[in-house]
Image 1: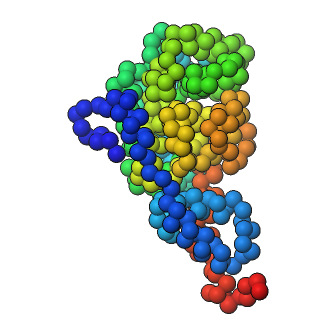
Image 2: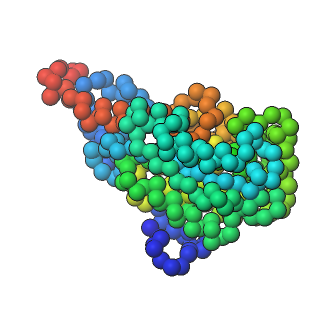
Image 3: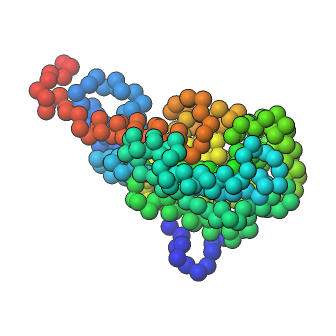
Length: 342
C-alpha cells in the first residue's frame, strides 16, 4: 500500500499508478475449492451461485480454505455543504450526527441486522462539523483533503476482517451519488435522481437543478477529479477502503447507490478494479440499476430497499458466511461412506 504514515500526500497521478498495480485473483485457491466441491456430499453444481461465491472468497483471500468467521460492516458518515445550501432532503444535516449516535448506541436498523448475524460494526465520523463544499459553488474537497480521506478509508480494515461490508450515511448523499454518476456517464440528469430519504417532487426538481448547475461549474470528467469536485468524504473513504481491501486480499460486499457510486469512480480508473467486490442489493433509487449496468455488476437480492447505512450489505453477508461454511464443513462422499455416482 501507499505509505499512509508518510508526511507527503500522494497526487492523483500517483494514486492512478498505484491502482494499476492491484493484485489478481488467486487461481490456485479457486482450484482447491473446485477440487473439494466435486467431492462434497451433494450433486455437483447443485448449489449454483453459492459455489461461485465460495470460489470467489477463496480466490480473493488468496488462501485455502476460505474464511468467513470475521465479517465487519464499516459505515462512513459525512455532511455535505450542498445539503445545507439547498432543500434536497426532508431532513436537516443535523440528523447525520444523530444517526452516528444511534449507530453507536445500538439503536439503528443496521445494529439489529449485525447483532442477528454476529457482524462487527464500525462507524467512522468524517469531520461532520466541517461539511464538504457546496458543489454548485466550489469543489467538494481540495485535492489534499480528497486524497487524505481516500487513504483514511483503509481504517475500515482495522479489524482484519475475512470479508468487509461497506456502507454510508449522510443527509444529501444520494444527490451527490447522482451527481457523480451524471459526471461519469452523462445522459439526462433526471434519470439518475430519486427520492433518497423521502424527497417530494419539489425537492427532486431542486436536486436536478443542483446537479445541472454543478456539472456546468466542474468540467473535468477524470474520475479522481469528479470525486474531488462532487463527492463527499464518505465517497472518498469508501473508494479508499475498496482499494485497500484489494491489496490486503479482503473480499468486499458493497451496499446501495452511494456506495456503488464511489466504487464506480474506481471502476472508471481501472475496469477490473471491482473484481473483488459483490453488490449486495438493488436499491429502489432509479440510478442504481443504471449504474450497475455500467460497472457490470448484478445484485444478489432486490428487496426494494433504500435505507443505506450498509443495511443491504449486512443482510446478504450471511449468504457468504453460509457458502464458506458449507464448503468447509460438509462431508465428502468418502468421509460419509455414501456411494458417489458411478
